[in-house]
Length: 97
Image (cartoon, rainbow, N blue to C red; front, top):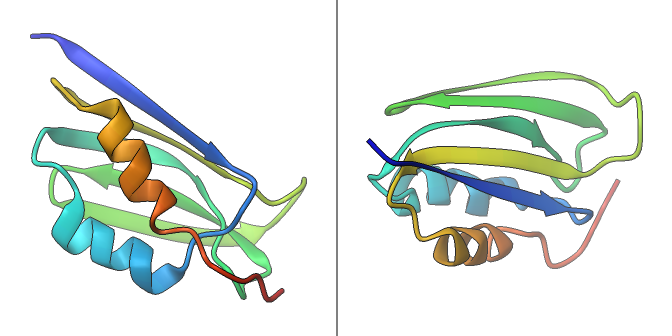
């Protein structure tokens, strides 16, 4: 089995609704594991994201450093460029803290 990791980093927050829609409708079937730190526009908390198969979990806690998104997706034969573009499309167009 060939595992392909896809790293995503951004110093802009996600739009929570776009990110949820991505998880529900846009996440490639080849992704079976993901985790990282997620920043949502309008939230002053950092969100620890975990995905395993079809299940995902997000826990929140205060930031201990500057807000940023840092995610890794693991799967078979991932199109990393397409996945990064999908995630870029989830970024908020304006930031409210």
